[in-house]
Length: 266
Picture 1 (cartoon, rainbow, N blue to C red):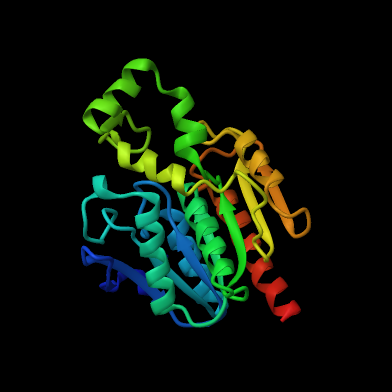
Picture 2 (cartoon, rainbow, N blue to C red):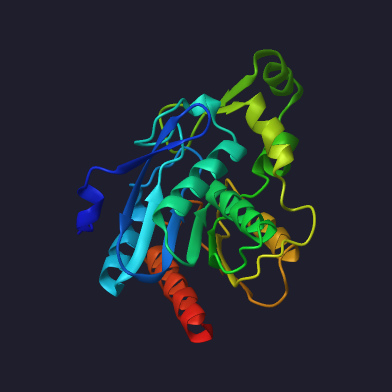
């Protein structure tokens, strides 16, 4: 049964110089607040987000989720999206809707957004803002590390010439669309270039049968994280979605463990 708040009309926030309308939902509860950050072309009504909404309601936790511009119930054109733009969307919603520390739950591209938000909070001197990171099939730097090496000469030429590349999607009848701007902006937001000082515990859940983000990518990410406070769980038969009942239960336990760890240390 879905949590009741998911049926509500979302709140909206105007973000950026182009005044794009960003939709988000919140549930009141004790902190730290769980914040859902979805993946490329996903939205806040997906299976994992709904599961976490129910978990938060059941456990009395605060919960916040949003749709990036061009996604789900938010305004803006998807093809205008970049990592910087979607990070800006997420930061604006968190600043407006989340009081106190947050645990960022980033799925696929959402993990990249989460890591950039963590870096930005630390750069701003707000070291207590992010209380933990739960990264699911994390795909930071995916444009440069996962996509670019696989593009053939014709695809690279099309991207340079037309500014856009389309590829068949395994999750939608509509093809995935990637823009030259996304790749160029991605290079300005790379995180797997040095040590990522999170200042908080990090839990990674990665499927070993993931065809989109190989588990070697998650293992490489671990080498860029502080050796203390980082846990990675490999799900041998898990795919990129990590949406089976057993996957959801694992995600729920990891989220509540991060909440407990923060409270015990507070």
